[in-house]
Image (cartoon, rainbow, N blue to C red; front, side, top):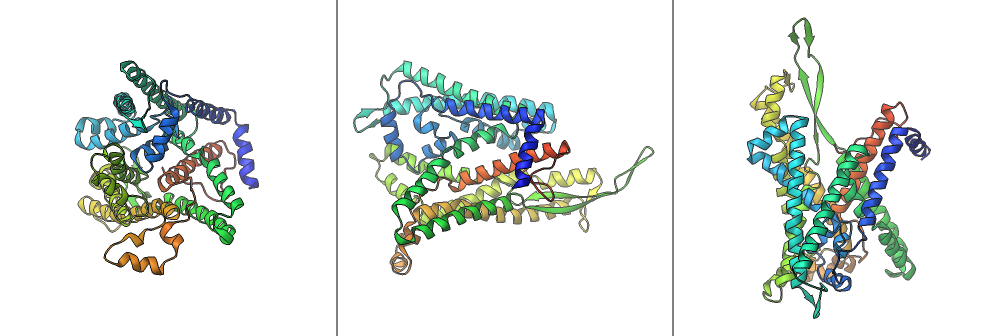
Length: 467
């Protein structure tokens, strides 16, 4: 702890680093101020009632990434989601369009063009989402009450202008933090939006402790929950920093009068190469049935049945969620990582893996290792994402048919099947985001301190982020 406090003091002793940190905190403060400015013309009370009925739908995912702004429909209601969606779309399109692939390989100039295209696509997506939100709000009634005070073309244009401008401003804030502050600006905005709800979670635990919500075992249950959260965070830190290092040897080459190469290196492959993208994709798809049931459940009753089967803790939800995470992990890693191109670049630079022939054999060897790591990473993502949900809602094995569920109901405790009912603030996806962003930011601070000959946060070695 003493070393940590000393590192914080050193961070503020360096003028440039201090200015970067304060600049980052100031812009994040601006973001939180904007998250409390409401969009004109919205009936906030009726909107809050709608969100209570929309738990588990895609609206909850938007609310997560907007830091609660979507629930209140503030000027930052769209949050960072349009930018994230645009970035993912362009990343996937690089495989389809050779022009974007060439831009990616052109270095800094190409990346600037891709960033510019991402901004344009973000604005387009923001306009489309704003128009959809305005139309949905005007067409929705809750218990005979309208969500909009004065519906019409004026409200639609005002909503599009307000929400699109807010999304563009958030994008600008993120870029300014990345350029002139510390850490990745977009990631930090998501991080702050999630962390602001932590006091509510702490207050919920304190309330349960005072009211003895779990009877005589309340104290033990709280200790177990805190210990479990600490263990999960430690597990995430351990896996996110894990690498499989493949040794690479470079042959000696004579360039002019200089002898180059002849050195050993390694190729680092992350255990979780897909990051948080597979759980986000899986959660988004699983949330669509709940969204469809919210909008059209009165017309088609089968949508409500599907929604009930795909709720937290249901066996079908668990099976589908794990399957989707596995599929999206392999799909995403297959797009962003090309073993054949890697093998060709190694061969052109005179590099080879000891015991493996250059070219096709190298590509197959790296691909084999990557598949194993991706499977391990996907299992890790499924465990981390499902564990908090199981603690909240339980594992509803008693809902299985054919007489199997009744056996589980007789032989398993109620808390296992129904959950503890505690309102964890951190779900699986949000916990991955919070820990990952914290690791990357602290790692950058560590690098800045060490570069200026100051002691960092770690006593031995260097802190390792996800990048």
